Amino acid sequence: MTDLDTRTAGRLGAPGPSGALRRAAPALLGYAAVRALGLLALAVWSAARDKSAYTLLTARWDSLWYTRVAELGYGYEVRLPNGDVHSDLAFFPLLPWLERLGAAVSPLSYADAGFVVSLLASLAAAWGIFAVADHLYGPRTGVCAVLLWAALPVGIVQSMAYSESLFTALAAWSLYAVLTGRWVTTGTLAALAGLTRPVGLAVAAAVWAAAIAAYVRDRREDGTDGGRGVRRVLGMLIAPLGAAGYVLWVGHRTGKGPFGYLDVQAGWRNGFDGGVAFARFVAGKFTSFPAALAGVGLIVAVVLLARLCVVCVRQRQPLPLLVYAGIVTVLALCASSYFGSKPRLLLPAFPLLFPLAVALARPRTGRSAAVVCGVAVVSAVYGAFWLNGSGPP
Image (tube, rainbow, N blue to C red; front, top):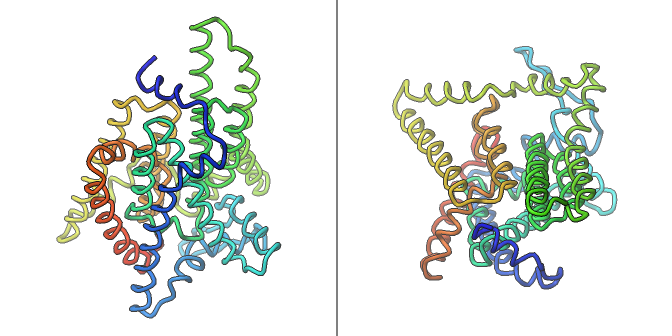
């Protein structure tokens, strides 16, 4: 066994729900403080520009599409002058379902329900990230990982009526379940993640990779699976059902078969081109100044992201985390979607923060707190500026 395997095995006896909540409390309180700072900065900035911060969080861009699906169901599309067709079938259904449920059982509007779902889901995501990091590296690193995730430059999205927080919560807890050998639970959570965003297939792929690796390890060590095989196979079968089911339903509804969802995404000019469009976008920045500075910044950001991926591998993160974070990163960088949204698409790739969290957990508490506070302030200011911009995040 590796050192990481030994640490993991030592933590398999997880505490009960109340004990787990007490253990995660510092991370959750820190997360709430960082996000509250971001919301305060957004409120002040928006008021100075005579805008409503709450409208920016709940009733613009993708939020409007989700609430429309929640209220009226699928079937709405917008035809643009250039021939593009923006269909609401591009948006996966779990968030609208929860918005509809919230509006049905409370006096909240669909937009209000979406905001509440995102707030609760962001806390669940923070708890899940802590659980995974604590399981692997200990509680101090878990707290640092949560604070770093909260203080990401695009962290304001975690408080929007978008699906990122909900997806990250389901993905994090699915990965925690697979690390602790709860195969049916991990498959169920992966299926729900697949009903939330297209990248839910990354969670299913992580479950499959972990299950295959566990089967090979069991057969190599003692020639048997110890009775775990049925639960493992069941988890594998459940994991892709959410994403696959919705994609097939869209294909049936559009009459275009299994690839109908790809046509829907093409109407939004979304697709996978291996990063060609993104490379052209970055290269285009170098045709003028000061746009060239933005080009340099994008190149540096991609290099740093690649470096984090390499460090994750060198630190021997568990296979499901590597598979999950790798697929999320590749899909975000190599898709031909709206380039301003790429930082948001990377938001669920939280395992990439673990090397930074491990490093941040080493210094004295005061030094770590100073670093986190500084990053949180920068994140709050940038988030307010970003969300008050002209384009969608």
